[in-house]
Image 1 (tube, one colour):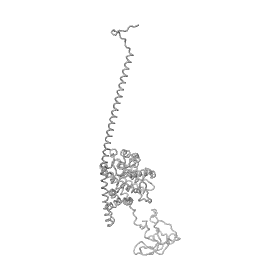
Image 2 (image 1 turned 135 degrees about the vertical axis):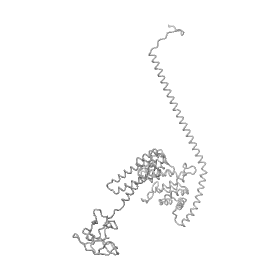
Image 3 (image 1 turned 120 degrees about the vertical axis):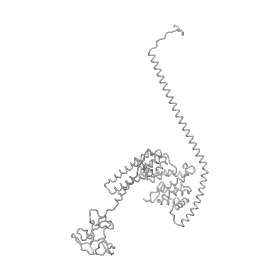
Image 4 (image 1 turned 180 degrees about the vertical axis):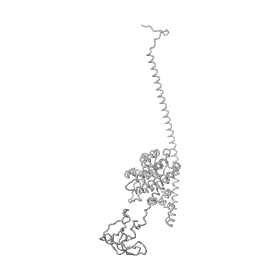
Length: 519
């Protein structure tokens, strides 16, 4: 049995091997790396927690602000209820006074006759609105498109006198929107989209709350539900109208304005709204409508699509509406539009089937493009970046070319002109010429010369004026019209100037003798 060593006794240590030293070194290195890895991991966790904490703090703050705003809005609405009631009562009293005034004005107008000025127009519009006669109101407006500016200024004033303006407008446009219910339609009167848009635009200042503003529209729930049903009906009939690409622009404009006016825009239909706006982007109101429909964040993509479709001028209007001029500079877009228009005009003019018509269409296309660019330059004050002088000179040259092409060809001095179809007549002495045209009608005993002197009545064979003018290859002679020697056409009785004069009968080419008749 071995003895236990004394702790105080000196014991010589065993030498440590090199392998043991390497093992301990590797262990220390592994521990250091593990510590560093753990330290980095916890540091990352701490940073993530800090970021999430900050995000939650911001969300809480945003929620608190939103709650405060909602509470303030509710409080404001509650406070303004009494004010709205007072406004309604005051409006009723005002409508009563207006009705009495209109009766007096109507008596005066009936006594003085029809009033065609703007005040007379307003009186009639208010009369329809006070009686809630939407059918008469619609007929009155639709036949006065020439007074569009006056109607735009007066309709909103007249709608304010309605008992229920939103319902009145929906009933007024129900004849053509969402579905055209007219039995008799004509090309000239078929498009009444302008009237629908006019009424819907004029309704906006009437339904906006006078205290809160656009945040609250004075539209009853029943009327709002009906407006939603109308919108769904129009969307359901979209395929019947030819789809998004083929639907008529007035119908699109009416539908989008209907959504904005009644505040029934759906977030789920944003893609539909975007497509409709792009296909009707040439309408002046489309940029503002696009913003009202909530398409502001999609504007860059829409502008790029318009540029790819060759609608650079429309793209310029959209860029100015949403403030993307720096991203889409207008001058390069306008120059690209002119370049594309010139290429299109050149392609049109190369039509070999109808060169005259093709040249006219090409000229008109170039003029239209230049006018659109000039209007854009003037509207957005781009004269310094894009001087319009060269465009104006080019436009004047195109218009001059168009006028010169319209001038009639000059008639040579030795040719006379028929009164009916401007065709050339034979020379005055054709009866004595060997190459003169011989009349193809049966012989008569009366000859007349060129118009002069006194009037007299004579029965002569009719000249075929209803035929087309002679082609150029007939030269100085009239066209060889077909005729029959068997029977003469019925005679025309009329008065012709000049006294009768006898010429020697000419019998040429072995044919019977015929008189030469001049008109």
